[in-house]
Length: 424
Image (cartoon, rainbow, N blue to C red; front, side, top):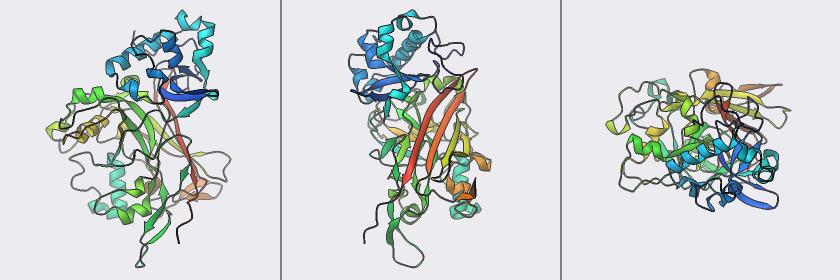
């Protein structure tokens, strides 16, 4: 049985535009009133409680207690063979013609939790967070804004995925508010001051969730790297552009990127995205041998960004893009990350970097959409934005469209809170 078969249907009614059909079954961590955190998968408007399914003896490939955890890390550590077997087993149990769960009213009552009654939490313990800069369109746009058209791309950009190590401690789940950061700014010829960020931005990204360790001192080939990727999340790399401009030379992003990163609560498995693989753009010059890849290594995932100001009754879509635009694939990012012998760990999170396309509407940040504030973005009703203001709510959505179903990620959302008072 192929869990990705577009003909499969669950015994639960799932709308055609739901993010969570039987072909998806993304993993997350949830709690309910009176019951603590445990692992579940999303199916339609329900969360399937995997702790209850395991207690009923229906998930024999997984050791007892793994799904009673408050993070996916123990399950991810079991490896890709167990991931695959578990997804196949869950698909079989949820199919329309499968009686085991469908006809057991008591088990259904315990194991199928309405999504509206579930509180979603950070789905895995983030061991470390590294962020990349791998969209050619974004890198070109940002480079033109900051350095001019003749020096848009740095000399190393087409030779390796450029990245930096950020902070795992401030990765938060969708719905958590984000406070505007304070930072040291240099304005004109005056001495630096500590003030609230005035150029707060979003970055539309995907996050790669690493589900296996690698050994310190070892490199990764394509086969071993592919087996380490558990799945993907939506990711908003909140950015303080003015703080970044003063601090980033000579060592790159630091505090301007460390105050908050929002991810979606559902981790869509790499297996669920297999039908949506897409080619990477032609890479010129050809990468060094350790970065070369075969097969389709990008994914056709449609992405949208909605913005709702404090004065707006409904959000407006300000950007749409696609994960398939990435110049450097997630696989190449992982292989490069480990290429010097850097040890990867279960729960590592790799940000794709801002995902922008060729069209203006496909730009994945306000830095690009407003061209650093020189052409403010019109939102309707007379409101515009160059950068984010207090009370603004950003919502990312993403899905891969199949034949009569979609494999979606839910949303990654956050509202901007005012900065704390600056120290005097």
